[in-house]
Length: 369
Image (cartoon, rainbow, N blue to C red; front, side, top):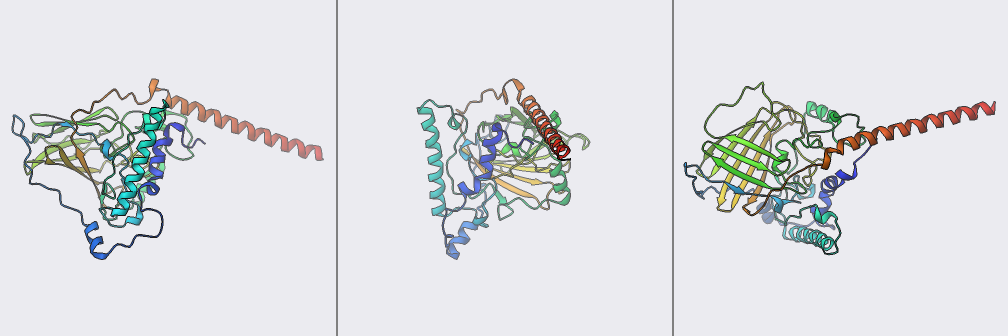
């Protein structure tokens, strides 16, 4: 009944238009020499020679602000025309950079003319030379879902599902209800509120997320995980250190419900319908490559849902001046009620119109006799 409401159109626009915005420039396909193509397809190894500063208790110090708003607009999945390429060509990069600069300039004009439009809401990133966050599979696309994954996805409910009716809170996902974006979706960019801050204490790393006001607690003291019978929205995480600069985190015990991908991440599936099963396992690697840089890699392995694991890579930049403000989600918590009441009203109106039409047809047939 109700398609995508105005409140969700921004995120959908970001997902649906990604191929047009960040794919190859229009026109004939670019001819790339074989030796150049080989270079563009090569996935560089993550540098491990940097030795991070240590905390007072002797662990690598990753603490600080690591917002990822500079990556906003960076495609999650790769446009098909870019094949197995990790990097853009010079021509593609110039086109992407021009588009993003124009987008940011348009928002600046809104502010200068005292208009509260998209510029007061959306954070525009900076162009980079990567084709996509996904680096495995090599084509930058999510693997095929299993039959069970497709079945579960078809049953998922959210305000982002096309032609859905709303009659109770159960018709919305955990992000609609301002509970969580879930994992791994919470570690990817979104249109705004991309703040990430890392805190550390002996045997503990905490990752604070600006959206949706969550803090992940990761124990690094060697304690065992909790019972597999217990499931949490964000799973249960355990971490350890490698190479003096890399935090490795394994997360299990996920509670099904949130979508593993989020529509607000550019070039993600558009309906928040990527299921998560209790068998899912997430492995993250936070590698400091310099005092102000981290390479973040995440591998998602959910054999119930996907036919193969998949891996994404993001380059973090330190910004300790980035400030978190309250993430109120939807003001007054009236959004769900609005969806439900409008959906009921629309269905009532359609039923009344159908009944009136049927009555009119019956009267006309009676008069004809």
